[in-house]
Length: 311
Image 1: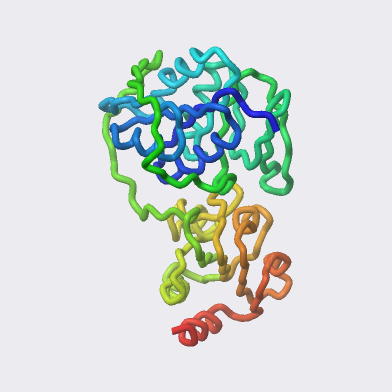
Image 2: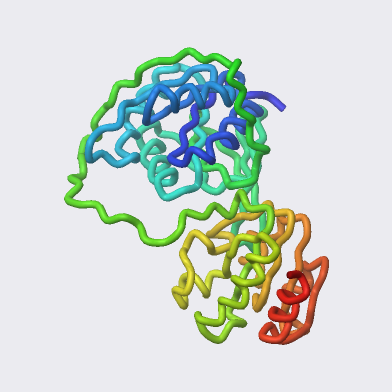
């Protein structure tokens, strides 16, 4: 496989940067990182393998996507075919859209695979996770948001050195005015990093019953996740805990589903786990087509029994 002459990377989430830089190192000859933060943040990007790091001082009342003109100017100035890798977060997608317009570049979101030959070909889920598709990119510059778990994260190495440069902030043509900020409610869980995940579905009759799953999760040392209806339909859990094609894509050692039907849109997010276990009273539930171990039974009886046994 050929390599892209230069790849630019940025992540609004520090814990996603190792995977994005790993992807850039695998796909590109040179890796350049954008950092909005401190010299320490720049050194961290260097330790992961970036050869050049541009550090931008945080601007007061400026959203991260407003740095798009600053990043785009440096990408355009490199004078070669280039790729930009970003996380699939809200900020990452907003940056991708703006940079795509500014650079006249193709944009692809939630990319799971990248191949480089005469052109760039990307793979991603389509039709709500019912199929995977390939798309050929013909523009000289492309902007991709990289799906979680696409590359093995790079390990930091303090002996690595990079060329450190100061980035110049280029204001966008229209600068939104920040009139206030409200702290986000809920936890800051990152299920992508979890080794064990216990996922709850609509098999639970009411929110209070989730305590049964929480007790078992505590005993086995698992993070708690959920299906889309639990997060977006019922509002019982935070959006960050929703597993599925438009939510979290797991790479867990163990995925334990309780009261989850197992529709394909959900299983796309769970099927990357090494071992899948499910409890459902419906013996015909689709999830049993994916499991390594399945229990047909009433979760209200199975969970207390398992919790007691595993204690």
